[in-house]
Image (cartoon, rainbow, N blue to C red):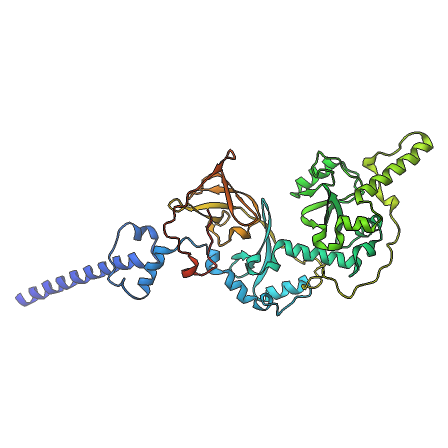
Length: 436
C-alpha cells in the first residue's frame, strides 16, 4: 500500500511539473509567434529563452524596427513588377500597339489600371492574382498615365495625317478643323487662354448649347473641360467654332507634336492665329449680311464654322522619319477594356513621435508603398495617426509636401526623428517612402 501511495505521489508530481513546463512554453510561444494577436504579446513582457539566436532573434529585430507595411507592398513590390516585365523595362521588347502591350502584361498576370484621384489620374500596375497594385510610373515611366495619353494622342494624329508635318497635312486652320472633326479618334484642337491643346472632344465646334449648358452636362458626368475662352474660365469670352476638350484626356498641342504649336501653325497658315482667323471670318460674314438687309441675322454664339471649311486638305508627302513618333509603335487604337476606378487616398501621419507621413488607402484601410513623387500633384486630406482629418496636404510637382489646417493656414511639423537611418538599407527600396 505504501508503494502504491508513493507511486501516486510521484505521478502527481510528474503531471504537475509537465503542466508547468507546457504552460511556460505556451507563454513563450505566445510572446514570439506572429500567429498570436499583437495585443496579447504586448500586454506582458515575456523573457524568451530562445531569443538570442536563429529565426526568433530575427523576428524580434524586425518587430523592433519595422513600420506598418501595406498588404499590397508585401505581395507585390516595384521590384517584383520590374522583374516580371524585365524585357520591356530593358527595352528588349517593344510593343507595336496597345493591344500587344496589354497581351504582354496579361501573360505575366498584370494589367494597367487608372486610379482617379481628386487632383488627377495615375496609372497603377495591378497583379491580377492578388489585386495588389504598385505605381506604374515607378516601374517604368513609359507606363505613366500622361505618357500613355501622349502615345495615344500621337497615334490618333498619325492615323489622320501619317508622318507628315501638320502644317503641310492640313494646309490651313479650316483644313485642320475639318480633318479633326471627322477623326476616328474623336480628337480636336482648341485654344484656351492663348494656349493650344489637343485632346478628346466633349462638345464639338458646332454644338448649339450655351457654354453653361455644356459645362453643366460635363459636371454631371464627372468630366472637367478645357474651356475655349479668352481667359480659360466660364466667365470668359467664348470663341465660337472651337471644341470643348476633356481636360484629363488632353495635352498641350506641342507635347503631342512639335509641329502643332500654335505660333508655328499661325506662321505657316498666313500669320493669323486660330482665334483671330475665326473672329475675322465672323466679322466678314456679319458685314456681308448687314450690307444685304441692314442687320445681322446670326449671333456669334450660333456661328457655324463648317460653312468656311475647305472640302479637302492640301496633299502632303510622307516623311521617312519623325522625331515625334514613339518607339511604342502605333498606339492609336482603343483599349478593349479600360480599367478605371475612383480611389480614396489620403496623407496620414505615421507616428506622432516622428512626424512622418505616408500615403494611406482608405478603401482598403492600409498604408501603401506609393511615394509622394509618384502621386498626381495637388491637394489631399491629411489625417492624424488615428485617421481623423486635421487639414489637407499639398503634394508639389517635385514630391515635397506643404501642410495646411482647415482654414488654409500653413502648418509646420518639426522633424522629431533621432535615428535618420534610411529604411531602404534593411528592407529594400520598394517599401513606403515617408515625407514631412
